[in-house]
Length: 238
Image 1 (cartoon, helix red, strand yellow):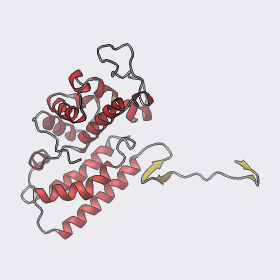
Image 2 (tube, one colour; image 1 turned 60 degrees about the vertical axis):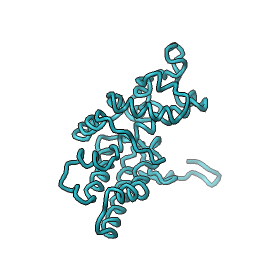
Image 3 (cartoon, one colour; image 1 turned 135 degrees about the vertical axis):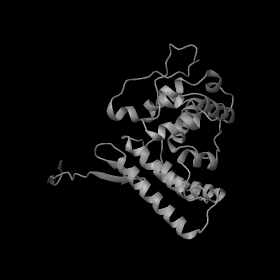
Image 4 (cartoon, helix red, strand yellow; image 1 turned 90 degrees about the vertical axis):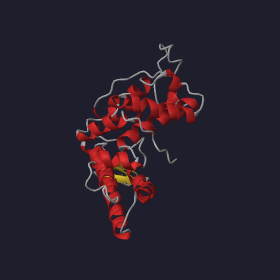
């Protein structure tokens, strides 16, 4: 690079941390997932050393307050670029659920049913849809999406699904489109945010909407399907 003092070599770096997020030169967030999982596991180990007996209520308070923020920080921006990324993050919740008295010997699906939380990949989908709804309400949807003008049934809230390859298909403005367009109109045009959340949770539990969004997660996907169809509602702590 040429400057006032003459040519200078540009330093090449493979990863850079900014605003608490690790960015890689190949635009993959796998390093961010690894760092987040490492910090979350460290907190879990500290909790295990501090508390000799952990109940369901204890874990819900401790996990939501001290562990989950590491796993869900900047979720709309940080996306799973590889299949192993969401599985790595889910392992943290798997390990946390085993810390509760009497649940260690149970399988993951049973532990989730007892404790109440959903898979983290479900929460990512839910947060993406809630953010999309907020963008439409605030008149900012056109900055992120191409609203389909030909769809009159959607009353201006149907998103045109663009083609994307490799990295682009993981961006928020692409990955949420299929799930959003599959929502029933009663949910899309809910008069309030609270009603939209209720209708969204019902829709997610009663349908396979998540299939248009979630990556193939092996056994995690099987658990996800079983849990979505069981009729539970999300415990929204926010």
